[in-house]
Length: 219
Image 1 (cartoon, rainbow, N blue to C red):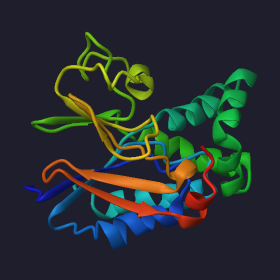
Image 2: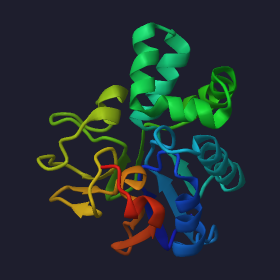
Image 3: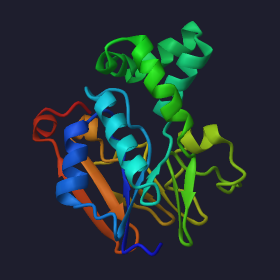
């Protein structure tokens, strides 16, 4: 399928309303010509992780070729908390925003039943002819195929990375920032109120802003 736009969307972190605004009113997603690549970190910190997960899941079900859902480190913090159930894993997730996710689902058990299959369905990377999309990055000396899943989720070497151009989230910037071999698209929706998308085919940035958060930034 030949797309006219391939737009990567940054870390959402439970910010549902600005996600809908970006996809439907700013990007004006057209499944006949567009592909959306969500870069991970759908959950934690923001108030509506449950709504975000339902929204992107419904998009994926309706448009399986046009929607790509990648994993973020926060999804795997949640999965390890649910699967391993050690105090350390649960506390690590909670202090990184997991409590907000639990609250959005109403209780721990409901969150677990919804999130475990969701997280297990996510991809660690997506690759086109010219770009690799991954949540964190690719370690120096590795390719996206040889790197460990954990390193793809947590890497932050975008400034010195050299290799096939990557589009990453994970590290908040005030604006979409282009490095020599990397584009960082996490613009801190939950911290600064701005959720961004970057169209690799047309070198275009799309932004939606939650004015309430923007006026009272958390970061």
